[in-house]
Length: 473
Image (tube, rainbow, N blue to C red; front, top):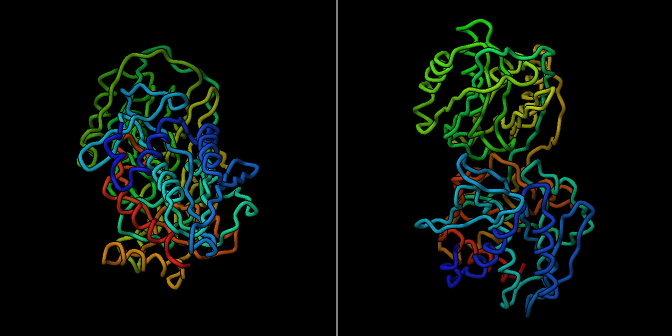
């Protein structure tokens, strides 16, 4: 519990965040958190709007001398990535998140925290409920951001009246985001072989202990992909021993998360052979993933054999940073993440997400995936596909934010574009506006059980947001 923070300056935001943590809200299952937010609006006497897919707008009238100013939109998403450690017992459909104070940070007990983006929702609610003179606000809270920005893509422009949008889904205090990468996701499917696996020696292997992280902002931090590591172990085993078969292969939970875990079952080889291949491969990643480890135990061979083409495809697809920005040399320009492998009764599906600030490079990732799938016998389907949000350095909203930041902190924030998809770019395009800005408190290790949000950062962003909404627009 984080009740010790309820008396802080941003105590109202922490109270809302605790309430949000108590409500299960996996992507695609936002009905309970949406009902909670609508109840808050009713309690405050705010008008409520909802579109056909479940996005909501809470309409908060202006107060005092600023009541007639133009509407400012505060935007966040209500869903969260659901990841847990292997040894954590937690049902994301029924169990509350358990936030804990750990020094200067709030984290969770073996699961993702959901500060991405629950803390953004909490901050918006806290500022809207304050009694200070402030401009009219619309709180636009979207669904299903984490699985592919579904809420942003499907948002009905008719429910939003404001044309200046502050997105609260950024994850580094002291930084203003004024642009973001685009993204495309692909699913490549392979049919399983018609022959059943060998009934001889069969071993089930579980890789874990990888750091994982967000496939955008963490992609350049040297995190190793557990799925590709598992494929490397199978590849090394098959190269050293004829007759090796793969009976199961699955890993990852989200396309936009670097996979931390992967499991597979192999047949037709000795336990010592599997352990030797794993030791060889894990030795090569130990410098980057010191906690990575594999457990192994006997298993029954079940179902149809998975073709080695699946392993070859996983190993062939580009993964990680593909290009850095030539002008801003510390910023990633193009990347790819193989995030999920699902194992069905008769097929295997592999999900890949590419990002780039250069749409042509984003498309090139897709062409390479298509070529690899064609050669190895897979079929490909394209999911979401969107270009990036182009920066506008002369934005009036940016200038207002800069003035508020200087007033609060007697300093200037860094101004950047981010290597991740942000909803405000998509929503802004639908609304016909480029008056967009994104900021938020520092969040580390998003999309993993190590996720944590900085306590002082939440206090700072709360103060900044109050300064923004109390200024003439």
